[in-house]
Length: 604
Image (tube, rainbow, N blue to C red; front, side):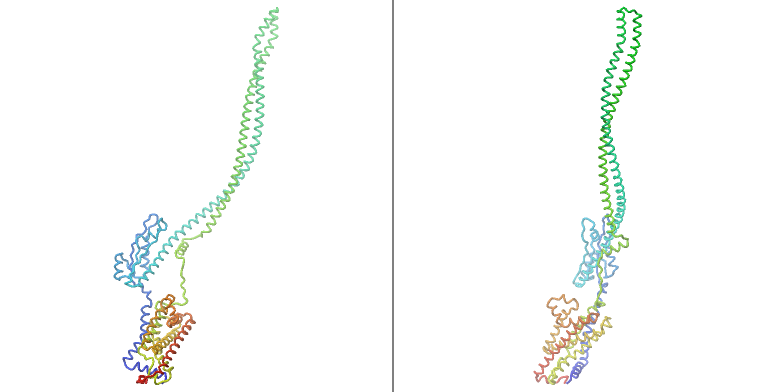
């Protein structure tokens, strides 16, 4: 009997009665229903989050600090959440939210506590502390809801941090802009001060030069004043001597004048005693009276001269005293002028240092102005947003699945293929014992036992491909290639389960179920296979379903075609290996025939 005849005989057996047809049809639909319904149910769960009920409790009292503008970040967050509509947010009281979470009315609750705004604005105070967002979940409602709630609160935290950070950065940038303006004004002032200091330095230099000349002049004046004082002292001393002698001469002249009357009387008496007549005495006295008058005039002149000499002496003394004071004053003036000259020199040097320092200050202020970029309100707003959220994720994808369902499609298509083949082997007889007894070609028997479920599996995968493409609308970068991988997968699965049935019988059928479970967890269809425990990760590199998943992904999403060919090469090894084992098992059967093997069969 040839292979096509054996396949046709098996198909006749599978469709021999209406119930057999129904059973075959039902089993043929198993992978289509499994893969199609599951992927339909999970096609876009993230797009339906707006239907997930979540309780929102807003207890924020806002800020009360009089040093800053009143603000209520809790209300802002609540408004943003309600406007966004990512979930079915339901604003409740704390007690109402607790009851709703307990009875399953909501999947989780988010609470904004009363000190939320106060904590967010505490960074500028003496007691900064973090704000809290309170998440409460109930895994009895839905475990994944807890995970979703955690991710949601984290997104809220990031958005609040961005909002608060943007405001704080805006204030900082505004302050920097004000600082820049003040620095610019300070630079202008420092420039003017530098110019003034330069002028003052030049003036101090001129003053120092003038005071130097004044010091030299006052020194010369002091020297001349000392010389004058010495001469005036000598003149005063000479005048004092002259005044003394003049006083003595005046005294003698006064005495002589005072003695003239007595001397005239004594002379007249003496002449009378000598016997001179009165006429003679009068004649002599007449001769002497002009002389006496001369003496009196001389005394008067002498007394006048003495007064003038005394005045001259007194004046000379005053001149001497004045000259001494002038010398002392000129000396002090010379010393003061020298000190003033030295001070002016130090002032000039100090103003030079000040001028250099002000120049450095001006340059530093100018550099400070240049270091702070000029900005506008719009630019500061952009800068604040950038500071608050400095990293933007560029989510570029080499390949991309259009939605969650399409992301799972390669895994569930591969799994549906195994389930379909496993179900077919519940009614398909892998090997006809009558054929083994009647025929002497293990190869044809093996091929016939493999091709029947493989062909039916190909029909299953074609139907599943139609459901995924047309009913669910999944995109396939290489549709025919994807279908080819799915057909190759069921062909490989058929060879593996055939070998198990040939060698182990009903136990082999059970082992097919165990092998499916192992591949379910090791294929890497949901989480990356690298997250698996080491023994399961090792199985990922051995069992065929992981390679089916990878090849389907490459062809469905438009990935690396060379990887798909590598995966198909591994499947080919499994296919050939399964058929070889099945062929060896069939060969063993041909050498161990019994009378029971000769009983009639549908393929007889």
